[in-house]
Amino acid sequence: MLDKHLATWLFFLTANILCITISQNVNLSYSGDFLYLGYILVGLHGFFLYLCTKSLINHSHKDFKKEYVTIAVYWGVAITGFFFYNSYPQTTAVITRIFAFCFNAFFIILAVRLFHRYKAFLETNFSNIDKLSFNWMRFLAFGLILILSGALILVILHEFSSFQFSLYSLFAIIVLLFVNILGFRGIKHSTIFNQVVIPYNQPQTEEPTSISKDKSYENYGLKQEDAISLSEQLKNYMETEKPYTNIDLNLKDLAAALETYPHYITQVLNTVFNQNFYDFINTYRTEEAQRRLIDPQFKKLTVLAIAYDCGFNSKSTFNRIFKQKTGLTPSEYRSQ
Image 1 (spheres, rainbow, N blue to C red):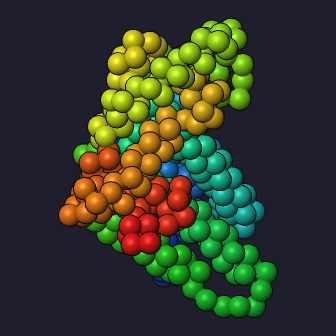
Image 2 (tube, one colour):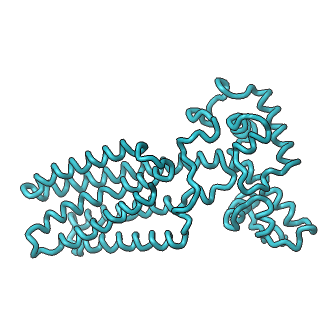
Image 3 (cartoon, helix red, strand yellow):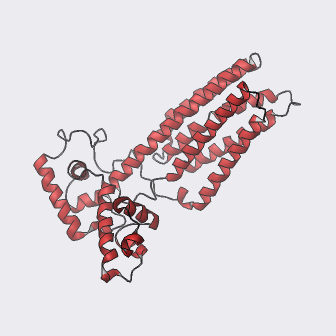
């Protein structure tokens, strides 16, 4: 679904640029129609950002019924507005711009919220999320926000100042640059279309989704004394068996090893250790790395080899988490 939605988005981006370009040809009697269509197509980019974000989580067409109905309504409003454009071009143009901007803003907000909810879900269930967290989608969101903000500023300058420039040509150039940067990142990070996607709506942990870590576990979780007992059992298991050295360790596997339910582990992590699963496991990995970096027994191993042996799956993740928890890079820590 993701590749289809991204391809459709790029198609509409191309159509958007073509409409803007054709509308600048004053010799064409129907250039105004292409200008109106350009306004409408600009309003779709936030929607496609949300669609692509949701595609990371859902794979079935059935999960997108509301979105498909929404876009049908959007086109219905757009077609209705077209009949007024030739009669009231200036008024309709202003209303269309506002409509497109609001439509964009609404779906960009939804996309960002969905992204962070999914990221929180991953951190609750997995110890390594680099190949699952989709930071490239965040780049899309902020890039789109910058483009639309820039376009809004250009429109205001064009309408309310004497500053003269080719507004639409400049906007087309900005969009083209964005598409080229997106393509470059797609080539650089070729795993975009090959990474493992864990559906957010798939029950991974048997944990009630309506309960957050800030709310009480009294209605469905462990009693306080049982939670403390499980925390001791968990701590002992982590120190003796060192499951965190397994790069692919997840909440479900850890719960199975302790012969308990995943949401009990989550409860203990949240209430006793005040951490999510991702932070909890990587704290142990960092402490193990600290020990090995200064242990003469591991002196011949490179920093990267130690990182992998401790359960980290990449150098960048290791460096980031290690410095976050110790204030030093692994190399600085080893040489002190």
